[in-house]
Image (cartoon, helix red, strand yellow):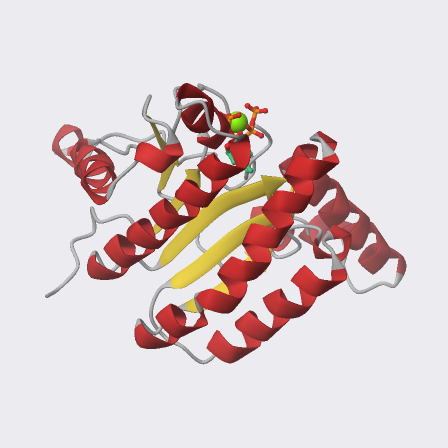
Length: 242
Ligand code: IPE
Ligand code: IPE
Ligand code: MG
């Protein structure tokens, strides 16, 4: 089936509301995170079916390091388990896993499993599954600025050659297209330091559902909503141009 140009190529998701989902049920927050991982698998499968090219999940922000160490440790344990257990799914569905963020801050054991999963899946040509881990967008931008400044010092880059395209190549997302659609669950209407540069023209979709309650049908609804949008990028729509 040929892909229509209206189909989103890259969908990014701020998975929010795990803690509130658990609290509502009188459960510890970690139970919300566990349930959230089940949702992750459901949405990965749906993205494969929909032939999405890139799916980015915001799994852990740089700001999330501020949470109580018990929660951070619990999340790191779940993450490590996810990286090991999902290798089979990645293989079966031909998925390439990559990650963005300050990985050197992650526990060594997580870094090891992350590298191994990336390595094992690197030749898979289907969906690119991008996990934002220990990620912050402002920090990413600052680090790009530093790298560009270094390259100027080394005379590898000329100041008048700096443009949007060059700048993008210094970001973690250098290989990826910008997200077409950004989804945030849990009813919060903010970006929480996520992909600020990359989403400058993304369509935004907010749903009040907590992440553990988000289902394939909700994902399909977000995509259907996206397809109805008129993306003008500052110009005029096709009809208006004629
Ligand atoms: C999102 O759920 C997952 C992470 C940030 C790791 P939260 O843990 O933020 O859940 P709420 O927002 O407190 O409900
Ligand atoms: C954003 O959620 C980060 C992730 C989903 C990983 P938060 O729950 O950390 O965001 P705030 O604190 O509500 O802005
Ligand atoms: Mg939250």
